Amino acid sequence: MNNVALKPDGSLAAVVVRYERSRPATGLSAFPDGGTSRVLLQRADFYVVSVKPRGLLHRSELTPHPNQRVSFEPHLLGWAGEAVYLQIQGCPGTPGDECYGPLRTTSLYSWVPGAAVADATTKPVVSLMSRIDHSASGFLEITREPYGVGIRTRIGAAATPLLRFNGVRLEVLP
Image (cartoon, rainbow, N blue to C red):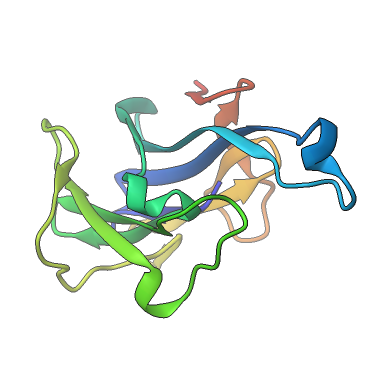
């Protein structure tokens, strides 16, 4: 899981997960140092969930462009109003190639309720937070946990599971 972000009012949470399936090098290609694994599948799984009541509002899969397959990295940028922004970065080439500076390309996406994820042309000023502590509305924190995503409503309390990995994807827990 790459990162999580609460909407500033605490009503929604966005999560992006980097998923990659690969096959280890075999035969001569594995000699002498183990070789480079062959990447079979890469994608960014993007989720938006309602915190109260709990429910999945959106799930989509974003695949990297061919020029982003090396060092493929999805990342949530944060919320701007009703929209959440995320980006995918990477480089062209094959596994083992270098990826730095001018080789790195970035794709920017946005999502608003009721719509699909769309290409975004500009990056607005965003709010990236995982914790809200308002005296009037209370405390809320979303956390990355070994099982998936948890939520806390009290400082120092144990996280309650919100999303759990089912082996391939995250699923919302009641």
